[in-house]
Length: 145
Image (cartoon, helix red, strand yellow):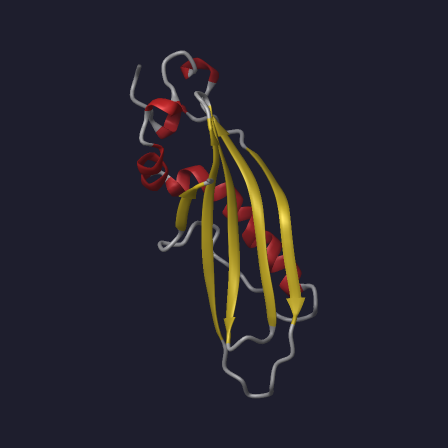
């Protein structure tokens, strides 16, 4: 078996929104809020030729006010056909590979989530909340039980 390189993955990805939660909350006048992102990636399936993820971004507002919003995208990345007989994703340390190539594997999902959050938060006449179209450095990565 050949060593797996991120360039072996196809440019095409399967990505779709699977869960969205948005609640508008009251806010007191002259309140300062801190807004942060919490990202989680759950590796849901690994087979010889593809890896599937659930990519979740949760926007945390402290103190709890303004809104609550979180969304999860399903994402599947596949090895290109020309490499499918040369490599197997089951033969590698998948945690290390995902950590080493996190942005390359998941950026499309985070781009979609950034667009969704901006569209929803801007639809009420205010300034849209723009989140990074990439995973945060403190992203929690785990394999589904």
